[in-house]
View 1 (cartoon, rainbow, N blue to C red):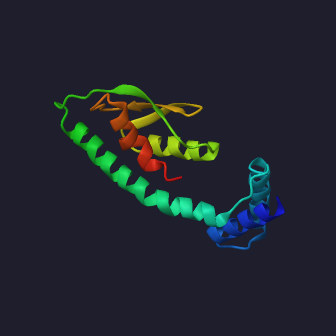
View 2: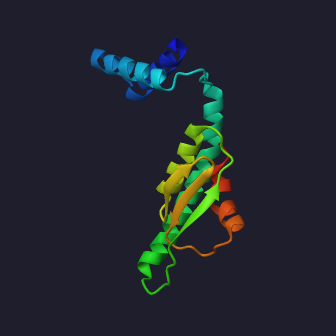
View 3: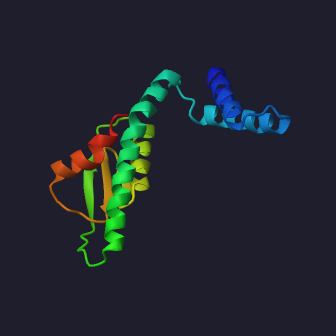
Length: 148
């Protein structure tokens, strides 16, 4: 837990870019809290985490841009038929943190909202459901983000 706390404190100092006592006190408290909450027996491997984010970030940005353009098209053309729907898809992710990141990424892309995570099932509301084929939806929504 000490190594996690020190690593998190180093990140805190890097983000705040100051060594003011009040910032250090808050940083130590936040680092201890996060290290304790995420403690357990799972070691924090900075390299693994950075690699995950390095692979995930461009995929997320691409999905974010595409979905923004799609929602803008729907909003700017109100005569377009919109077919909202809820789908149940599966994720191969095992880590709860990765599932949470997947759910948040889906919710942050306009036009989709994660409604529930139930084991390996994820329920998603889609603003414009173009197909009901689960294989296609799985490939379009879930598999792109599952580089985690």
